Amino acid sequence: MEDLLKVKAKIKEFTASCGHQKSLELLELLPTGKMLRSKLILKIAGVNENSINLCAIVEMIHGASLLHDDVIDEADSRRGKPSINALYDNKTAIMFGDILYSIAFTKLTFMNPKIAYNISNAVTLLSIGEMIDVDLGKSFNTDYNLYLDMIYKKTGSLIEASASSAAILAGLDEAKYALYGRNLGIAFQMVDDILDITSDAATLGKPAMADFKEGKVTIPYLKLYGKLDINEKEKLRSLYKKDLNEAENNWIKEQLKVTNALQDSIELTRKLGYEALESIKDENNSSLIDIMKQMCDREF
Amino acid sequence: MEDLLKVKAKIKEFTASCGHQKSLELLELLPTGKMLRSKLILKIAGVNENSINLCAIVEMIHGASLLHDDVIDEADSRRGKPSINALYDNKTAIMFGDILYSIAFTKLTFMNPKIAYNISNAVTLLSIGEMIDVDLGKSFNTDYNLYLDMIYKKTGSLIEASASSAAILAGLDEAKYALYGRNLGIAFQMVDDILDITSDAATLGKPAMADFKEGKVTIPYLKLYGKLDINEKEKLRSLYKKDLNEAENNWIKEQLKVTNALQDSIELTRKLGYEALESIKDENNSSLIDIMKQMCDREF
Image 1 (cartoon, rainbow over the protein chains, first blue to last red):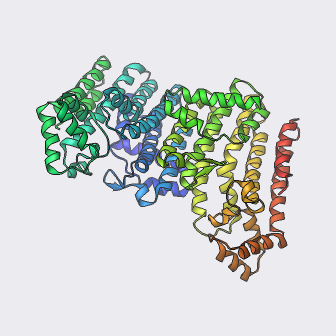
Image 2: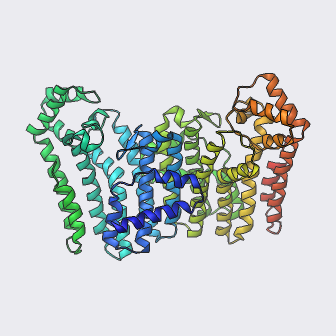
Image 3: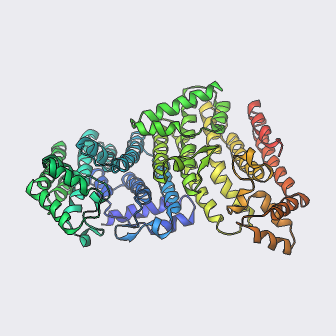
């Protein structure tokens, strides 16, 4: 997509403006991913100087958060490529993350203060969401509200701020797009949580069913736990954070199926998607409908 | 100082506004230090709502940078207290640093855009300065300009931005105060580098002569290297990053004395101080003169 190339060029320009050659070299090593946030911004605000700047700022913030995430999660790959902490070291990933964050914040000071507020406040939520995620992973969490609050902060907040800020740029109703973005972000994370169970390692580019082992009690597990009897609950708890053998893996998958926990999780993402579409139903933006439908009506 | 208590209260208020209890708990564990940047801001802009807000923002940024520094330097104490990475773990220090940074940037969006730019641009310089510091520490650096550029970015830039932003708040000449702040910051770092050599462990709260062992060729070593003959240069290089015995330590100290390298370094900090004072000579602000004189005319 040609417009996304403009965003990438702007990210390079912003990074070059700080006059530090090594940052430009590190930038080249950063996988860019699907650029969901940029696509969303451009579909709402159109392609113009302000929207491209906003995209670059948001992608740099997203990239910075992933750099720190990978250090925190001790991940050695990202989107199938070796991560910066693996290629260099944790120090470099932390420092380069700080550089990208601060360049993005500096460029934000030239934008509408409401946009600058939306985006920087989302970074606070995102950073808090990361800490809540780590803290929730310390013991078996059965509280749906804690999970929802965490994924809203960690994943939803920056997508919400991207959508609402794009709406401000385009002179549209901020609140409608904020709700759309919020639900898109939460649904996006839930879809990711579901795919961790339903996809194989080749598709995921990482081991399947890794979340539960890493301490993440995601939406399918939360739904499942609510449906199990007391003995089965105990069994599920006993498998938490463990290296599972095939029988244990199959038991979980079977339970997710027979209890409808997996199907209920898929329905929940669709419900969030419909709410989002309801919010923008008078906005006459078919691209946003497509983005949401592609995500929620996919095969699992 | 009562005014600094107002700054501390504002930092707490800002942190509380993000609604994350653990961040408030972590804040309590953060040693506040001398709050040089706040003192400077208040001496320039006076004590009022805007200046207290600016102080809180700058101190939160400084605190965040130290949290990440301690992870990068693998330091287990800070100002004589255990560091967050030692009390908790690296993850917590990284995440809490990100939270403090982003709250500060969020609060900046309510300030004069020129101030928001000055401060966030300083964070970019500071982050780049940190990376240059780490990179310079990989081999024996003999280039004074690289050292000067690094300490300006790492230490000078945020003090410069604090002074120039305070000047904007007070309707004073931004450039004069920027130069004052820049030189104060650079001199502050050089004084720190000199004290590493002239002070004992008890005064420093950390081992003496630690910089050279950690790979930092600071101003006294740079001056010394320039004055040694080729054999002595080789000897100094051979001691770089080593655990030194008493004889080796004494040789360095003796050379720093007989070559006047130490005295020249002290003179350089004074020269920077005088330049700073020259810049604000018509500003009629005796407190700023005192701050600089206290730093540069101290005992070493």
